[in-house]
Length: 109
Length: 120
Picture 1 (cartoon, each protein chain N blue to C red):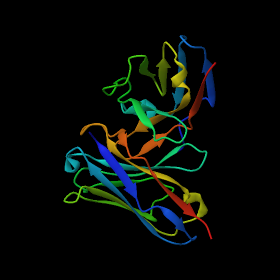
Picture 2 (tube, helix red, strand yellow):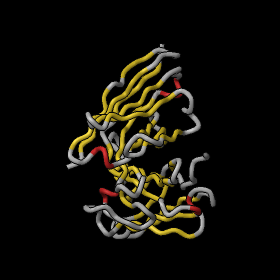
Picture 3 (tube, each protein chain N blue to C red):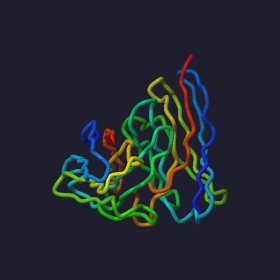
């Protein structure tokens, strides 16, 4: 069970779009539909943004979207806002175990 | 609304034990699977364990298998994590989280966490 691979950091300007990748293997990301994404601000608990690859819980803006191709999942944030500056984590939620990515720090310039 | 409140964290000596609790409200606890996820200071998220809605199946991360037991009391809407043989590597904020839906086991709703510090 190795952590999923995410870029350590990404950045963008307000109004722009950014993508964050999450690379795993056929035994996790590639093999299951249960990929999720989380946002975490400093000192706060994580908040779910996306689950089952591309579903948004109620209350999550449609600026956040998810997709998957093979063993790589992608989170896209469009219309970047200053409050989007946070850490983002992906997750492969398989039937018998759950695996998180190492996290990506998003900086809004 | 869904509310989860962890308790039981604190300072424990290496080799010691600790039992964490997570009190749930605002939903039918007995219908949802539950996770424990931890986060070491300044580090990322690490899944610890999850338990299905009725407690019949439990799954653990390799890093804690054999030292940790997840359990639940559906009559009291409470989730537990019993930890043994603790080391400094177990120092972290421990979060409980509910499956986002009854069919999807992504950790959906999270508590605010309880800090466990393993130190002599």
